[in-house]
Length: 244
Image (tube, rainbow, N blue to C red):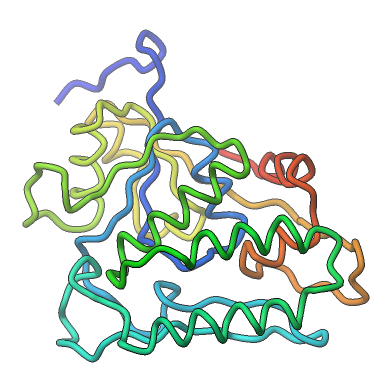
């Protein structure tokens, strides 16, 4: 197959990620870097990942928080998973915990209002709940990237790995695919090039903020970033990455 010359085409940058619960800033750097972002929700849920948990800072240590899921078959896809019947109570407890832990943070008020709006959504399905949270956070940060849901795209669901990614890019008319740097061992630039797609990787820079902090832990949930940084400063942090 002859490769398409991307220099002669308008750039359409695609990013694809599984839905993560309040992910770290690198996730939002990727959303901010692309034109179309795909929530990859029709792949198997893997226990121990970031689908329903993340980390915040508590008394100079990282603390893992989790929203429990209803017990289900281990091979079910993410879009088939739902939160447990305890979700309502967990939301209330989580907001109380966030308030207790971050009430003295410089941007607590506006960030807490955003969290309350996110958690007020009455939907216990994992993928829609997280998708909505990502959209609301992006709206708060003026990120205008278009969102797509993988399970709603007409594609060959038998494809796996980079072949599936290539097809999703083709369906969305993408000629540039950007992945977080962790995908370097999974994807081949030559394979993408054969399909007229330029493969790039995003590397998050060394981000550190000290407003009100006596100790810094990197790559925590976006919640921590929101609490300690103004919207304008977070917009600058979104640019602290390299793409190559």
